[in-house]
Each structure stands twice: as C-alpha cells, then as structure tokens.
Image 1 (cartoon, rainbow, N blue to C red):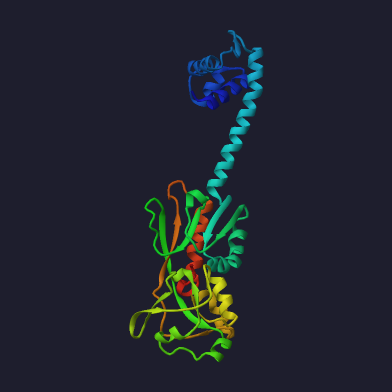
Image 2: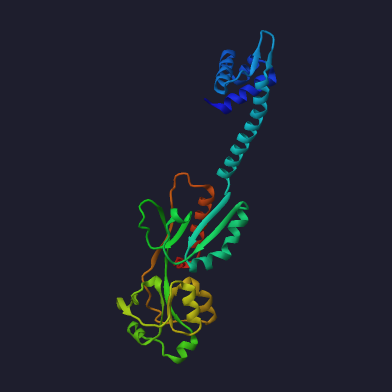
Length: 301
C-alpha cells in the first residue's frame, strides 16, 4: 500500500473532520477515502478514527499515529526536495582521476568550475597508472589511449602531443642531437609512460623510427622527469602542454623539433550514462571544454 499517501489522507480527514471534504479535495469519492482509511487501520493493526453520523474523532492510537504522520511527511517532503535539488544542480563530491601532468594543468582552472557550482566539491586522484573505477570509487577518469573496458563509457576529447627537450646547461655540455640516432649518445630521462623498454617511437621527415635510448634517471610521472630536465640531467620526452612556460622562458629548449612520438587520444572514462548525477555530468562537460581549449590537447599522461 502507499503508506505516505494514506497518511496524507488521514491527516486531512482529521484536519477537515470530513471524509466528503477530503474526497472533494482529491477528486475522489467518499467511499474511496473511507476505504483508504480502513486499509491504513488494517495495515497498522489499530483503530485510528471513531466514526459516527455526525463527526469523526481520534482514538488514542489515532492521536499517536497523527503525531508520527506529521513527522513522516515532513521527512518525506524534505527528502523529495533534497533529491530534486540534486537532480537540478551539481551537488556533492566527485572523485576525478587524472595524470600528474593533467592534475598540475587543471588545478588552477578548477576555480571557475567550483565558483559556478558552490555545492560541488572535487577530489583529484593523481597518478600515471591505471585505475579500477569501481574499486577505487572513481567517478571520472581522464586517460591517454582508448579505454579497453567494455563496461565503461569512454569519450574521446583530444590528442596528446609530446616533444623532446633539454636544459641549456645540458646542451652547453653535450652537442644537441641532429638525427634521432644521435640520442643513443645522450643521457635520456626515461618517463615510463612511453614504455619501460627504453625505446622511443618517433615520427618525422624520415617516417617512423624506433630509437633505443639510455639513461640513469627514470620516473613514473611526468613532473619528476620535467624537474630532472630543468636540472640539466638529460634529454626528456614529455607532453608539450606542461612545458610551454619552460619553453617560452628558455628554461628548456626543443631538440629534434621535426621529430615526435605519435599522438595518443585523450579519453574521458566513467562508469555509466544511466542515472549519471548532475555533478558528474557538469565535471565531464568542464573537462571537455578545458581540454579542447588547451591548444593541441597534449595534456594527458
């Protein structure tokens, strides 16, 4: 039975003192209202109303139920209002998994999103590995490459582009490479995103090449490799977007400018379109806009 609906009718019967008045309010019949009250009494196992030809009076059980009925309806209405608000606005917490590189780029941009959605909170989960969205409670994951999870929704929004760079101090001590094969004579800073086998795949005027590289420094996130490059430890292969400030300021210099690895797709991954909360949809829309605003989209890790 519809307990909430029956309690609403019960309250109105008590307030109006009339079955017929409640029936008229609801566009129903007096017998239907009376039947609903009988069903409520049977459900609760107690007589709530004393009926006579002239009036309706509450029993002791009826008085107790009336007090609880008001409380139940207040709670139900508050719940409906809260859920309705959440459906219409971005309310709640979103766990967003991104690479270290993307986390650094996105963090200062999140102010606009949070200002536009004052009841939204964002938790950045940064790392350059893979994620189990269900196991880790991740709402949205921005990753490089296509998603291989058939159960997840994936949306391609851009492409990563990477470049070879070195610090002026390093190049002052080591002549810049002229051809990709020259990298074999250099200290190369290994970012495991490009594979642990120390083979850099480069595309350029001569087509595609696989270049074995060597180096005594390696890391599993791009920011560590960037810091090593700034310190003059060697030549790094990194996402171009994270280096723009360094390149403009001359802290890093591009080498082999005509050669770079093939771009990787940037994919937004999330569990399901069905029942997607507004807060999650708002974050996804924000990510799509921001990733496309950043020239060439070379920001994932």
